[in-house]
Structure formats: C-alpha cells, structure tokens
Image (cartoon, rainbow, N blue to C red; front, side):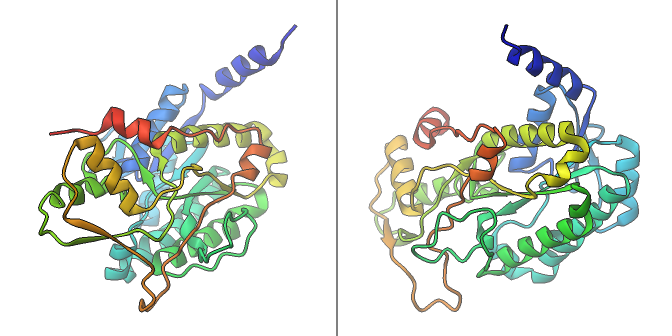
Length: 325
C-alpha cells in the first residue's frame, strides 16, 4: 500500500488549521504568497501600509514595534513571511536611511516579535548579497556573501538580524531569490516587467535607449516563489523542535539565464514591435561600484529538503501573459 498520498493528505489537514502572516502583502511577491497560502488551505493574513485593505490586508507600520506586536497578537500566526522591503537598488541609493529602516530595523523588530511568540519567521532575501564576479556562480547557501551595493548590504544585514534573534531556536529561516517577474498591478513593480515600457519607447528608432547586455539574470516567477514558501513553512512547522537542525539559509532560482537586453528583444518579438531604438551595452568598467555579473543561486539545500524547485518557462509565461495593447 502506498502511504504517500495518505501522509500528504494528513499534512494538508494539519496545515489547514495554521495561519500565515505576510508582510508586504500588497507587493508583487506578497500578493502571490497570500494567495498561495490561502489556496493551500491556510488562514492567510497580510500587512501593508499605503495600499492596505483590511481585514485581509491589515495596515501595519513596520517602524512601530507596538503596531507589529498588536497585529501578531490579533492574528496569532504560526509563520510570518517577511516580504516587505525596499528592493530596487536605485531607490535604495536614493533613500539610504529609509532603506536601512525597512530592510534592517523593521526586520529586527519583526524577528523580536516572532521570537517572543515562538512564531516561525521566513525572511525574503536576495541574490545580490553576493558579489557576482565572473567564475564564482552558482553560489551555495553557505558561500560567503560580499554585497557590492547598498541594497545587497541592507538585505544581508537583515538576514543577520533575523538569525541573531531567531536562529538559535530554529525560528528564523532565510530564503534568497533573484529578480522576480509575474502578474503585476503596474510594470514598475518588477525589474523585469518594467522592461516592457522600455521596449515600447524603443519603437522610436531615435530613442537611443541603452540596455545592459552583460550581466546575467535568472528571472523567477513570483508564483513559483510563493509555492516554495508554502512548502518551506509546512516542512519547518511539521519538524517542530527538530527544525533547529534544519538549514537556516535556503535559496531558490530559475535556471533560465538571460540579460536585460535579451529580455527586451523577447518582449519586442512577442509584441511584434520594431526594436531599432535600443542597443545593448557591455561591462561598465568606469562604474564606482562593480555591477554583479552572475549571482546565480544554487538550490541544493531546497532539493535536500525534498522541495520541488521546478519553475515556469520564462518565454512560455510571457507569450501567454503579455498584453499587446
């Protein structure tokens, strides 16, 4: 007799009584995470700020410890998925104080609240914690991080804050992911989706748009990340006290490799647009900070946990999802 389906059913029933709390639930990833936990039978509650929609998405100021504590006491979650972050390198450089407040200080507040209530905390981090020098990738989860920009530096500091507070009890887990794409309310929500706007501008042969054709990217769909997060939460909660011996740092990524310029070429092809107004650029050796060339993440640790690391086909997804309007 095959007990696997029975075990899987029992696992689903056990998780149906669990609650997940998702920060940044109005963003590109957070929305998908909220939907994925709900679809898996959990009670899923999110938090946001400017785009909060109570009661499903509570308005919570992550700079206010009391507000965080109150939200967790009200919802009583078993796991927190911390998606909220300033995640665009250019915006981080433009607002370094605000970036540190959200990516580091707020993460520490959430970790303190989680630890004091014995709540599992999964912190979303980035491949940009690595330098991305040619020949170094793929990076294993235990590789030494050397971020080259403020975004990567603050996300690494957030990782350390979470593990310092929650790591000893197995309550803190890091999930690093690369650049994300997927269903967005506006193209600007994703560093991939926003390239569609550049492609439209490039219809003008005199647009003189330049696009990076040197750095390698591994765009990963936000729905795939959300699915993996449900699997991680399930395995770590089922493990209970044994999770203290489980990996504290995990990584998830597509294996599909492409440059930003090549993405633009694909979008122009799908949309049937001329592409004369854009040219690809190589390595910028004059840059004050070296741009990461290849920060590809190894998914070995997830595979060892038995978690499915397959991802959607990038080209197929865009052919089925892109709007020609």
